[in-house]
Image (cartoon, rainbow, N blue to C red):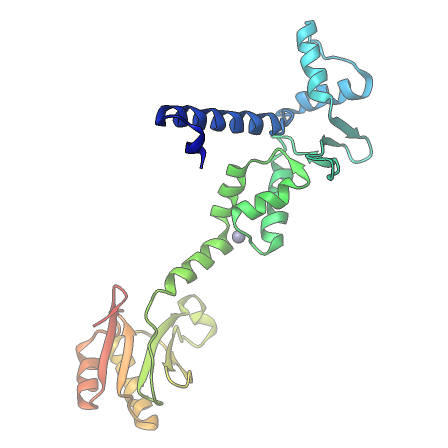
Length: 275
Ligand SMILES: [Zn+2]
């Protein structure tokens, strides 16, 4: 439609450029200019002294330095009771109200950490942008990149991402009991002295019913595991398929022979794939 008003493509391009420049200028004018956040306790005290009594520290020794500090303090207030510094953000339009935000000094690592904990860990582990938005509603001084780094290192979020990634694995489906048993070992070696020398637990799960067997072991030798499995299968019957990871205690000739004898297909996982 705009091209109707332009005599040539050149005219259209220059009109478009002007429009973009004008939009950028308006955006810059509307952008909220935040005050400098105190980066040292001395800087914090200089701001408080200026706010409370109009006194300047010796380093503000020129009219321009004093003018800059006064300008920096113009939207700030100090609350004696709490010892907190606040910035009052001007309303963005005629329908909104001024917003008072607490200034979080750069040097106060403990306070920054506590706020990041509260707004991320204490608030359902939202992703960094939402965590930052919630924090910014009432505080200034903590940057987006700081929130991003905190969220990236959050152990709970790391664990959840790992679980999400694992969702890509194809589910194993069984149609009947004993169609497939999955076995694994739990290492309890450090508790052996409290458990009569039992150091491992052989676990077996029936994929169909999720029924679990746990068999205590004194060692994880292939022959020990084989004996326990033979005894187990003689009581409950052998499965059609037996699955394990590629632990050396499972990949033994004796166990393969037992499986062959009982006509059990032995499957083991190598690099996440069944072999
Ligand atoms: Zn988290």
